[in-house]
View (tube, rainbow, N blue to C red):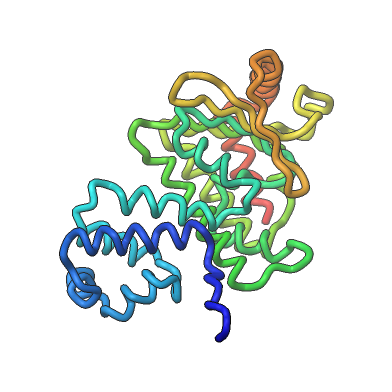
Length: 272
């Protein structure tokens, strides 16, 4: 007798599948009956419950609507969605999406929260070793989903400082960059979002040691996140956090004012 076939799906996918099955059974529904409520086939429900196929966002939303699960399905889906991000980044995404404020300083590229879909896709195509098309699409979708933070309640305050070099580096073609500049100027009109640019003519400044993101948690404590070469570091020790938050404050003071920053972005768009 052969060995049972090993389930190759991720732990999060298996967990979501089991939660869906348990909630469905508790509701007294067959797979076909749940499928009818969701406008899916019973076979589609079965495919998710057996991990034969992944649960799409549309499927998850339909299941949440069809089953009164007191938030259980939504909670399970949260871990499923986290898997779209690189492993080293998953913990930060959870912190970011719950933060009272997110203050970032970016040196090489436009910050991920402020990237357009076209910019993100063009950027991921530059990765090496090359990513598969399906990986590029998954990572692009995941990055776009982070923008839910912009309209979240309670409001999150987002501060972003971009090096002028990051804005001048052409990712994709000129149309991609033009769209990116327009998107940044549009974002600057949001009352909870501030964009500043560190101009090249400043020369030496407090940010030369590298990029960082300062997170203010719901408990009103601060954490500092940095990453490089696919590795991440989360700083929580109060003395170290204090040094880095003061450094961020100095970078902000040395950068252009928000209105000057928008003017520079528009100038760069006009140079295309």
